[in-house]
Length: 226
Image (cartoon, rainbow, N blue to C red; front, side):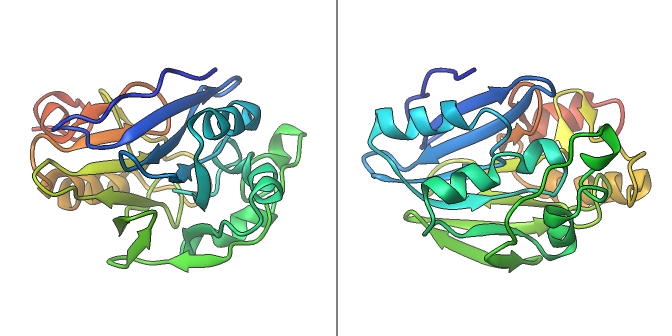
């Protein structure tokens, strides 16, 4: 299911659309700078038809596929996206790269419906900056939900940062840590030491559920807030 494209504003200077895949209600984000024809997708899930429809409707060319982590619901659309846009590099954190091609590690094998993604074209690590589609995206490693989970931070000029956060921080909650390689203590430490040091108005676009802000979660989140 696709939601309408949001128009750029002072607080969110991107054209952005969310596609929510069924089954796990996973959020895939397609976004571009205003007026640009180059777009990025974060965590393409099962509903790749809606992602491709969004790109076609906007006249956008997919420049790269970004994975915050390697769990099946966040990588299920990688293969379809690579087939449709073979020149778009597939990017994931180094620590989760093995999950792309291993159904046991990405948890799909445990559900009896194995999912395999193409291998990554580019592996990223803490502090690296990706320059894609006219944007600079900083990579922060925040493991705990998965061993090599990363988030992507866009810092627009004159506005608060935007975080594509995967399954790290949700509105009123945090990512599960009972999967293999999970650690609640590591996750909470990463949230507090990395996300919570960003400006209060920083928007966090999570892998599931509604958008939130750093300030809201610092004040109210029962798992990691004040």
